[in-house]
Length: 151
Image 1 (spheres, rainbow, N blue to C red):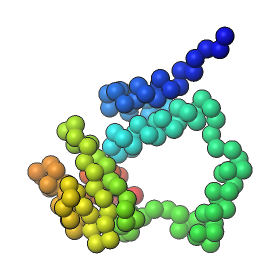
Image 2: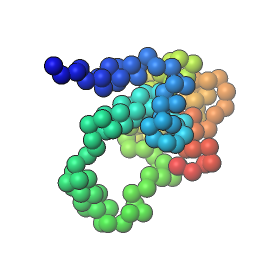
Image 3: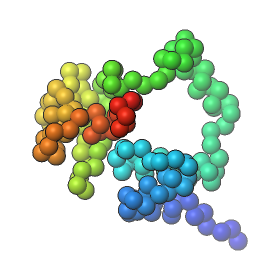
Image 4: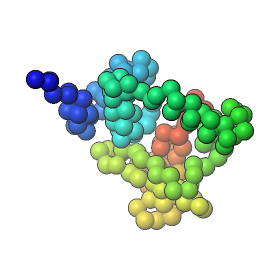
């Protein structure tokens, strides 16, 4: 008889795993410090990594196809592939997620700013201030900049 696959149970357990334990799993699976992003990001990346290690990653032909598509978009200029969120806004429609004091905060990037709880805002810092009651750099609060100020 076949043994049941433990991976689905391991993935389901991520939802109830305390955040410090998720960060430790990140260290174990990626051999690096976890990024300063929200819990949902950690869960999704950990879930992908667990499956990747158990079942294998992308096939080489898929990787080659993705690289070819990227070259078609940027003309082969790898410098254009780096995301510079401090200079370029995220694409309209992007959803930024941040957990604050146990509550998930969702911000949508709009054509002329941002939307949080159905209200328009011109800056992420204004939203971060509304959420926390203190002054924050909005880009840092939503994990779009690391602590050194680079993206």
